[in-house]
Structure formats: structure tokens, C-alpha cells
Image 1 (cartoon, helix red, strand yellow):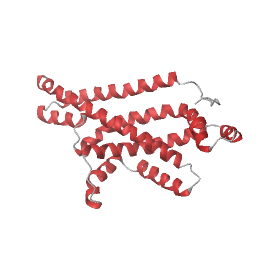
Image 2 (cartoon, rainbow, N blue to C red; image 1 turned 135 degrees about the horizontal axis):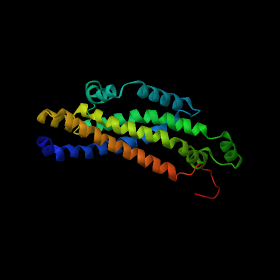
Image 3 (spheres, rainbow, N blue to C red; image 1 turned 90 degrees about the horizontal axis):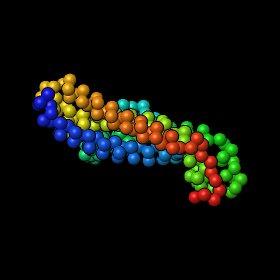
Image 4 (tube, helix red, strand yellow; image 1 turned 45 degrees about the vertical axis):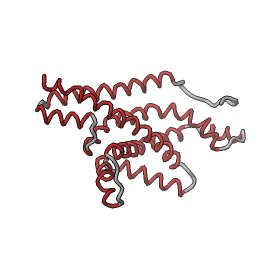
Length: 222
């Protein structure tokens, strides 16, 4: 145990790396989710079809395979070399974004059609209708599943250890190899990930409690 305690500062430095990957990956995932989720509903085929293909490919293939492809295969096929951290953020953001895209699409489609019709009757442009009328109402419904996507993203940050990113999991493996203390090291790892995911759940529940039961567009409010 004393040998493990000596490595704890090094171990917890990995939390900072894991949090960086999580925040950057989540930001990318949200951008991807809204762009492809809304794009999949576009009446323009040249927009709708590529978005659908992207979503199905990234949802239908393993995140580990995607990570290895971005990190190991791209340099061979396209001579594109990504740093381990960048490869991890891109894969996690795109992978989780493909799942979140369906959340966005489903939430937007759940808003009553009468909201679109009322905005049209007011001669409101479609872009303004989507931004000021539909999305505020849809966000209420998409918040819980987006919280689950964020939790999955946090757990999947451990995958970046496979491409030598010095995150929480990779550092834990190095300490285990040095000290031979498997049970203690991975026990600490379980507790840390549990704390991080529960913090995300707490934030999600806090946002849900503060969110009104429904949102409606009020003319004149910006």
C-alpha cells in the first residue's frame, strides 16, 4: 500500500488529462449532434444522405476500431498523422456525436407540428422558427438522454489509453506494472470513474430541476 501511495500524485494527474478529453470530446459531440441531427431532417438529399451515412457508420462500428483507424491507419493511407490526444478527442466526439444526433432529431420531431404552423402563420422564417421556437422546446426533452451520452463519453475516455494517452487508465496500468498491486490500483480507478460519472449525473439532474416543464415561444422576447 505504501508503494501505491507514493504514486498517487502521478495517478491523479491523469484525472486532469481525462477531464480535458471529456470536455473537448463533449464539445465536439454536441456540435456534431446538432449539425447531423438537424441535417438528417433536411429536405435536401445532398445534406440528408451524408448525415445519415455518417450517423450509421459511427454508430454501427466499434469505437476501438475507429480509434485505431484514426491513429494507426490514417498515416498509412492518407499520410495524416494525429497526436494520440487529438485522435482520442476526435473519435470520442464523432462517435458520441452520432448517438446524440439521434437524440436531437427525435427531440425536434417530438415538438408538435402546430408550433411550426403557428410560426409560419406569423411569417417567421424557418431558421428563426427552429432557433427560437422549436429548439428551446426540444431541449427540454433532449436533456436527459444527452446527459446519458455525456456519461458514456466519460467512461469511454479510458479507450484513449490504447493509443498511449497518459490519461487516468493508462497511468493506472503503469503503476500496476510497477508495484504489482492490481486490486488496489483498479479499485481506486473504479471509485474515481464512479465519482466523475455521478458528478455528471448530478449536474444533469440539477439542470432538469431548473428547466421549466415546457418551453413556449413568447413573441417579442429575444
